[in-house]
Image 1 (cartoon, rainbow over the protein chains, first blue to last red):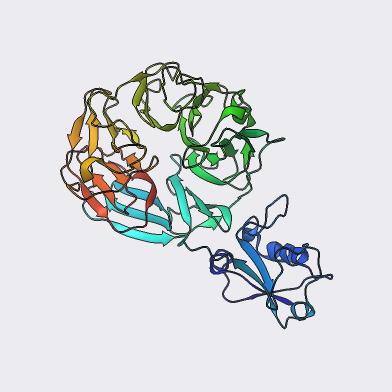
Image 2: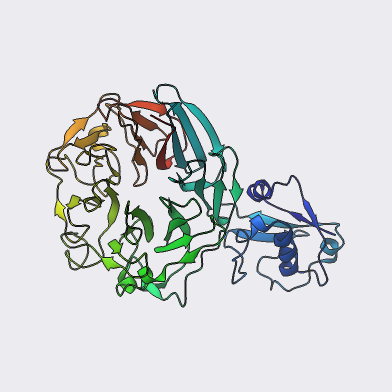
Length: 98
Length: 373
């Protein structure tokens, strides 16, 4: 099981509190993690990445293990600590005020 | 028992204001979707319990919310708005070509007869339709495919399709308006569209009388006379008596004919309302005095309405989708401001009260008249 931390607005939309835990088949990547997230919470489709192109929305970032993974290829394997559930994959809304 | 439900979209959520037919005491529900921009929400004329809301965010994009119980509960429905075919390009502000890209839904117009059918006006300008209650959305590509599409350019708010008017009896006819392309009409249910901008004159474009390129801010129609249209253009208040084939100016004695909102009295098709705004570079009322102007002659002769509105130091704006009317016997008029006030008149505009005054900036106001009169 991996852990995914969502920003507040998406937690509200998905009707969850705190992190979500997901079963993600190997290899565990940003892409496969988001596939599992959207399968469990279909209301999140289109809010993190484009429906069709799967391109990350510009004001959304992916962090894990103190690293910014936003610009890595989405099929890059996630760190072992994320795969083992020790650390969460963080979906973050860019700090932009408002 | 009659009642009124006012649907208010704001920069930070949706609010529902309800009252009985007297419209003296108001209950405020909200914020719904707190923290999100709610560009527009509107109820189905065929089923007043069915509401649709456009929920957007610069971070997380577009959502569409649907309520089946008058706004007590909501569920997200389909949010995929994909242009048909190869999108092509429109003009950017500087005249260069930009690819069409979906940004948000500005306006949702539920069918007059079917609660599951809704048209959505979006940015970049296009019209979409759902026939399954919002689960899926399909573009009506004939509009963007109008031969002029590559020449459309955004207004300051974006290249937005903000107005959708449905003909009351002919489902094949619709009117739409785009900033800053102009007004268009379909007579075949949205398959093909005709630019209806003859008579408009706009400075700031190379040919002031061009077929397209006009910054139409809003169009209004009374259902009893669907060939008569009223328009608040960037500058100029305009009127058409032939379903948009030609327009003539009816700004008359308005102190300024810049503005955004325009609407028609529910029972008097020649009575119209505007909120004059100082200019396109100063988006607030003249002299800090918020005023509605009413014409009972379908334009040209305008009366200042000020009772109950701020007399000084008022520098708010009233946006294009932020005025609406109810259909009670004494027609109620409502408008919201970028200062967070929603003003209402239950006497056709003679006097006004703020029914709520500290909301986030108001983007849209719609009204549902509920129950028997």
